[in-house]
Amino acid sequence: MNDNRTIALVAGVLALLTVATVIGQFLKRHPDRGLDPAAIRTFNNRLRGWWILCTVLAAAFWLGTTATVVLFGLVSFWALREFITLTPTRKGDHRALFWVFFLFTPLHYMLVGMNRYDIFSVFLPVYATLFVLARVAFAGDYKRFLERTAKIQAGLVVCVYCLSFAPALLQIPIEGAANADRSGNFRLLFFLILLVQFADCMQYVWSRMLGQRLVASAVSSNRTWEGLLGSATSTALLAAALWWAAPPFQLWQATLAGLVIAVMGFAGGMTMSAIKRDRGVKDYGTLVVGHGGVLDRIDSMCFAAPVFYHITLLVTGAKPG
Amino acid sequence: MLSPADITETQPSPVRPGSSRSPFCRASGLALAALARLLSGASVRWIASQPDTCQRVYFANHTSHLDALVVWSSLPQPIREVTRPVAAKDYWSRGFVRRWLAEEVFDAILIDRTDIKVHQSPVDMMLREAGTSYSLIVFPEGGRSVTGEIGEFKSGLYYLAKKRPDIELIPVHIDNLNRVLPRGEFLPVPLLSCISFGPPLWLERGEAKLEFLARARRALLALKE
Image 1 (cartoon, rainbow over the protein chains, first blue to last red):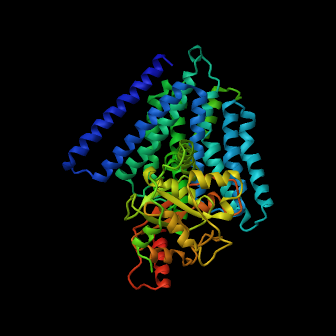
Image 2 (image 1 turned 180 degrees about the vertical axis):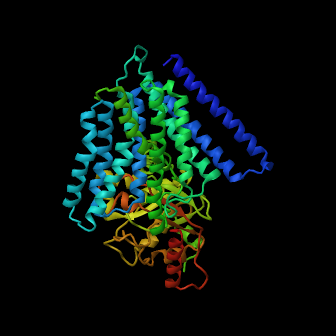
Image 3 (image 1 turned 45 degrees about the horizontal axis):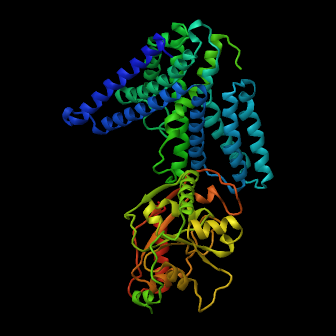
């Protein structure tokens, strides 16, 4: 991974993070600038999160494809844990859940690691679904049957299946002599992660600055149409500025991909908000105190990853697997 | 009524906590505590309360076979060394692994639920085993709740408090562990649970049994929020 584009990308990100950290620390030390201290705190917390994210990603990238797939597998496992913890299940779901956690999730990521697109693209949506339906039926509890199985299935699809398309990007064959060490694929994955994070952040900024019309006030009190529009535009612009880093894309394709990533990320955030709201109203929701977590951070990623994966397939014209 | 001084007289000289166990058992204890924490995803909260090695009785709601293990492993290591779970003999002495875990690793106090005699009351046995240095983990409902609701407390906690009024009683609320390993299941599902430790309480002077038990139960329920 020692070609110029990768070095440029890494250096750019490091420079950006350093500048942002310096600004954040400056604002923290000088609270008399008329800025909202809560916003500064949020900004600094987010920055810390990004430093950790970048460090972990760099380590995984450096260790290679398998390590990256394993890393995403662990993230999926933890996110699914949070998802199922937040959703009420009944005792009749217990054994189905056991297999979901300890068989289907690891096996799916193994298939991703083995680059078996032909199997992993249907493994969870078809086979895990059939298994969960049948296993819950065998357990003999028919109360709210469809509702319960749908919850497990939604958790699997969002937290495991969708997220796994991010590391699957590493397996897409990209033409070009400069890609013998797959550094192009790693840049592609980083491109996705960066844009998703950026879109999240821009959504917040634009909503705060110009936000007037809430998309759905009952679901989220800070996601506005202005935020969506602003985030889509800024993300598309950043994607255009970084198009050289994502190997298979031409300028307009990268721009379009940025736009789609921002919209999908927004949709993911809305979806998770709806689930949390539902649980928050019905329940006191102390179950994940101190775990406020992984799922909140990756919701946008889960929605953007599969779409970005298939856009890349379309653009490269490559056969997966 | 016994005063603490009477108790100590009938005691064998207190052993130094933790010293009786072999290094292997202590290592197993550490490994098991880590595994339990990982598997149950337990977040630990101390609400208006602090971890301390002073002698205490932790009383918790009972929802799963993992309860004793997870509460024990939620305690900081030095406190774990002086804390012994009180568990049912009929479950924990069955089979080699369970017996080994109960006797050697957790140093549990096993109570025979089927054979309770007047002279050999479980409360006396617990206090004898606790001596002047060990803390106890007890489940005052007397069994695992089926519904997940917290049932009425049995009177054991009251007699513990009455016979040793100097011991701090700490309510411990266990949340969601019944979904990790429900009654009748043997394979765990790794959901996230939450263990909350509350402020200590004592038996008030002249407090009636039912009053005290209801107050203790309320203290436990208050941690649920």
